[in-house]
Amino acid sequence: MPTPSVKLEPVKELVIKELLFFKSVEELARFANIAAGGRPSALYWADGVAFLYYPLPLTAKITATELVREGRLYWAMVCFALMPEYERVVETREKLMVPVIDVSSCSLFRAVASTLKEKAGELTTSNQNQSQS
Image (cartoon, rainbow, N blue to C red; front, top):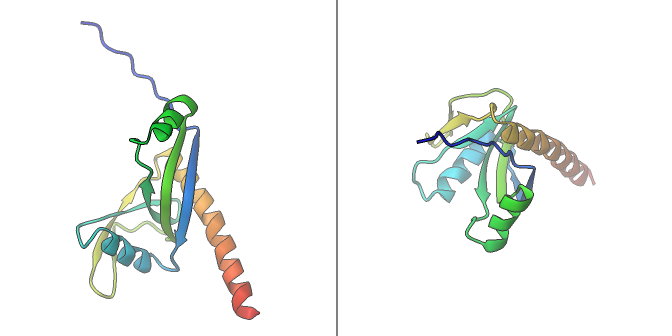
């Protein structure tokens, strides 16, 4: 029986529909816990950013078609906080322990982290300008 060939086709474009920025990784960890209904959850980390994402389901015909034909992937929402140094666990003052998974070996997640860092800078600057007005 011949061995099947394996072809890697990286995502060409990631479309994120909504962003939710947290001022601290502890706030993000609390949100992750609440969003998971108290079940165990984890955060992802790449290049100074901790995040979690919610993909649009591939059951939608258009979403599946976009991925297969165009190499375009859709995430409904990304929640994130800056976390300059990787830590295996985030502990909140309520003693929630949320694991953090280092996904920085993946080029897609590194690209996401880079974009999120830019957005964090914009959001932080705009919030500072609003509070000074």
